[in-house]
Length: 169
Image 1 (tube, one colour):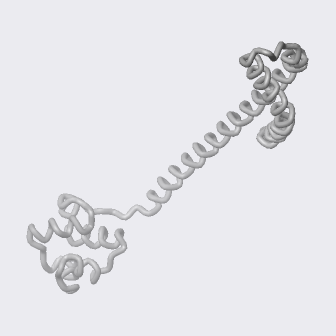
Image 2 (tube, helix red, strand yellow):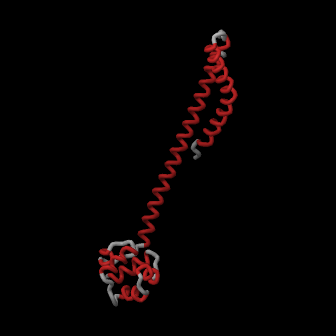
């Protein structure tokens, strides 16, 4: 059993007899003899072999190790399918979040425009002889001036973003 397991595990790790022998500080013929069942490594060497092959000593000494390439490919394929579904779901969720953010942004911009239009630059009638009132009036005017110039660009960009993130069927 040791000889078959050693050979199967070595091949599954992609190692040649020579590469394994170099890592174990033995000659290739020694590895060949182990795999043919002509000799058996001592306990210290078994531990070294298990470390190099990244497997347990009990696996080396235990039952036959069977290479199940078809099962491995099926398992990997199933895992990749699950990962792809999760990524697609995450992408869809992200698109929905972005779309709702853009819709909310459009609503907020429209609401602020409506408020500014209804108030009709209320600060223009203030008495600016008081410095605090003057600063507050300038702040309102600056906000209104900047908003009226920047908001349409942001609004158009948000509307375009909504159309680009909508679900296409």
